[in-house]
Length: 468
Ligand SMILES: [Zn+2]
Ligand SMILES: [Zn+2]
Image 1 (cartoon, helix red, strand yellow):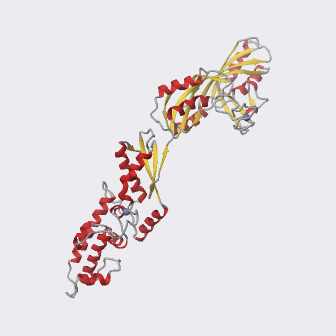
Image 2 (cartoon, rainbow, N blue to C red; image 1 turned 135 degrees about the vertical axis):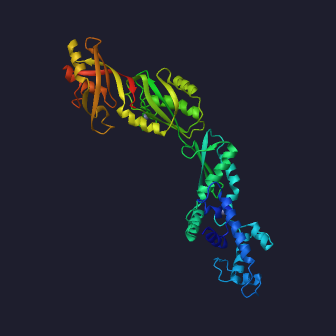
Image 3 (tube, rainbow, N blue to C red; image 1 turned 30 degrees about the vertical axis):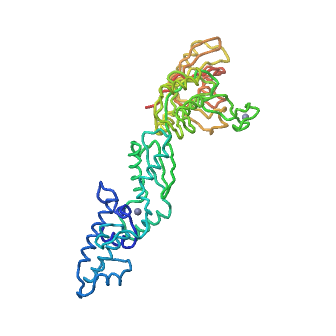
């Protein structure tokens, strides 16, 4: 079957060893398509040679006469007599010598091979794998990476030719030019750079145009995770564009384009971008605290996603110090480490089930006796809170009801009408509203239980405990 289809193919089309061998690329392991192609050509040359030795049926015709008379280039191998078989054999040898560029066949005919132009499928490009690899390696200069992947973009008409050929010859176990070229160029690049090809999660991908030259390098995002603490109030987690100018800069924002001069995001991502030579960075936090809330204790988990990082082997200890210097005592990070995209997803999911511990300073509308505080602690222990989206965030969040659990609440008087609460609760509960009641949108609330108005004047996140 292999020899039958290969014989037809090489008789009709000029094919290099790789392109012929690739049509059987799914068969036999541990060999290259070039080797497959050569092996098939060799067996065909031997077949052709054997057939050409046959004497004509009438015992008269010479080989040359017969070949010239029937040389229409379509050898179907179904010789119906010894005379035809001899002619077919010679035709096959000639096809191998010219279209196949196969010297052993040319030797039988006593001439040089070649003469039918470039390979019908690859146009001879697969003989230039080394050049492509050198180009790809050069394109990767300036990028820091541990591993890489070579992708190949095959010109449309080349891919179409190959598809048509596969259909014409009912090729079942072939490989694509794209696959072969990526693999073979990848192997060469690996030799040049002494780095490994990585299929699953490469640091960089270099896309090679075929035919070329054309090289495009894409650095995969680099992920660095850690936890941050925010030690002062008045800093938002993410940069807020000025509402008046949309970030362009105007009189209201003094040309900064921002509502707040600095954010946790900027404090952390700027040194990260500087250290990695990235084109930009995205900040992913496990939830967020209010602008006026402090985030202390074990810190809030985050991941920074760096785009187009040039340097991937960063000294994380030095980076941590750089971030903390940039934070100037207002924001600090701990435990920086390399991370991945999966972590970003789990960060978002775990943020919803994470347990948070808050410390709130609450101003009351009346003085309350000690037993009211004990009652407060008791009534909220293990309680479920019905909370509609707070009025203050309604302009940017959908109005919906959320049920959140308060695991524990402790209360102590710290002044005449001041109490301090420590609330351990499910992530996503708005604690300021748990205290005030938010005009009936949060039930039950601290104000109702105590029996007078209650307002959170200071809020600190003192722990974020991620779910397993
Ligand atoms: Zn080829
Ligand atoms: Zn503005």
